[in-house]
Image 1: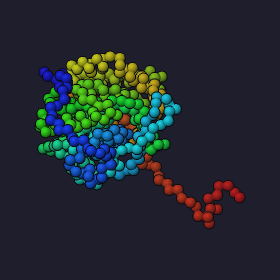
Image 2: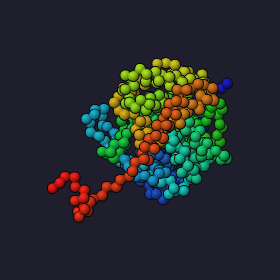
Image 3: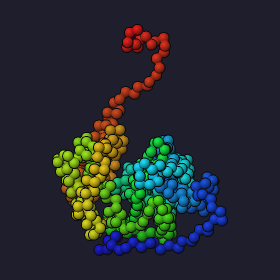
Image 4: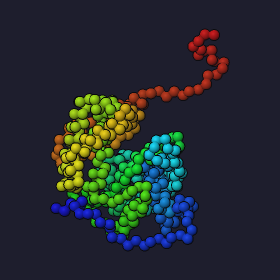
Amino acid sequence: MRRPWSSALQPEPAIVKPRPAPQFYVPSVLLPPEAAKSPTVHKIHILGEDERSKFIAHALSGVYDSVEMLGWRNISSKYRNIQRSRSSSRRAAAKVEANMAVPRILTKEDDSRIDQLVVTGKGYEAAEALKSVKHRVDENTTVCLMNDGLGVLEDVRRKIFEGMETSPSFLLGHMSHRLAFNRTYDSVKQLKNGETRLTLAELSQRKGKQLHQAPHKTETRSNFIRTLQEATDLHSSLTTYDQWLRFKLPSVIFDSVVEPVCVLLETPYQGLLQNPAAQRMMHSLLSEIIQVVEKMPEVEGSSVLQSYVRGRGIKKLLYNRIMAKRSQPSQLVRRIEHGLPTDVDYLNGYFLRRGQKLGLDLRMNIMMRDMIKARHSQAIERLNSFIPVEETSIPSDSAFRYRTVPR
């Protein structure tokens, strides 16, 4: 049986008409808002609230006529700059430049059609974000999902586009860049360069059946991919699905193996290396996840994935990342303590759904998923039990009633 990853991925055939070079160079993002709405303008929308959304928007501002950032939640938009180090030295002066993308606007404030869309953020945010622009996308829209976790595409199709006669074309993407918010410079700081890998969504079909796209949709998506590859800061490339999954698995496995044990034991990362029982739990979680990956139909027999999951590279990766974080608090522990949603359904939950269809026993992952959800519910109950107190000044004529020290 022919597998979707078995042959080298060739660029999709498309006739691309080169755009005439302007006589005078005008920075793309300086187009007036009304001019940017013209159908002839080469435009892209970035939907997200995290570091990647702002970094991607700035990186694409040099290859698009207009880059527009979108938000679906009514929160303040901070971090308007991009920060890079001048050299590898920690003492080197920071290089800060303004983000060239159009400032963030709410999706409900515009009804114009979206041709190309990049979605970033946590896995649980993807469906909610796309719901806010559902009325602005159609069968000619190309959507690139760059969210955390696995199974996001299936979730989006089920919640947003199920039952619709037409739906947009999808790409799956993942970035290895290390980014962080920096309050000092109101910026997104690039800690380490990385790569961006893209793959066609139909190659991720579980039964190895590729969905055939209409010629015009194929051409639109091909142009989208080529334009992303022109952005030098992203270092983008198009790969087969098994190579893309191999590229994304390290971060998914770390969040599915290390983070849950930190939550269970309420310990920082380095505490795991000093606890034999914690190491056994991580080994059990990892073994179950590897079983699922090896038996997934869409990557069955892939030499790229088989050599990775059967080698020692995964355990070495986990050890190196734990040592790099050391005494830092677990990210998942912090989210649970603040009552924030987690991506457990797109990490351990994803492997459980796939494992259940394959008839695998994943009892350790079941326990960790249920434990995380129980801790999260417990944290929300605790936060809701707090009585809000408003601080105010005491009137001068009543101050004597609240004295704690006699005059």
